[in-house]
Image 1 (cartoon, rainbow, N blue to C red):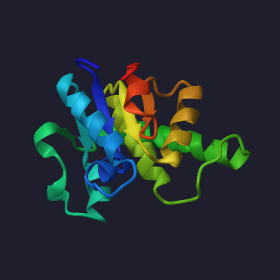
Image 2: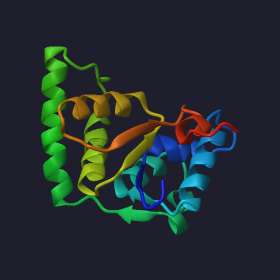
Image 3: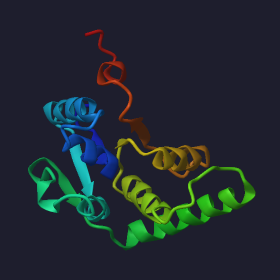
Length: 159
């Protein structure tokens, strides 16, 4: 993971910063490994706003992340992603939850693509579905890591 660009989703940060969460250990192990490997940890201002709904934004690990403001390039790409996702959902080709954060998910995917992320880490099934769809349409080229994947499995370690 050396020199990789890792885009952090809200669902990852919620679990990283909540020691009571069942996925906290995985989140902590990934975060520590990414830092050890000197990966660039990308933190969207959209994620900051989502996180702030449930906890203080000041609790986020700013010292170890690069804050990425949402800009006009991100907006252009998000519009393309959202149009494609909504059209596919109407045709029944992709199953996405009917919730208002789909636009935020498309914005985050757009930012990850525009910022040349190598990996998007999440624990959100809707993000995963959207990513799989965008990847199948060749609209994104970064990989997605589901936080439920044990770190040893992802990094190919026996112990």
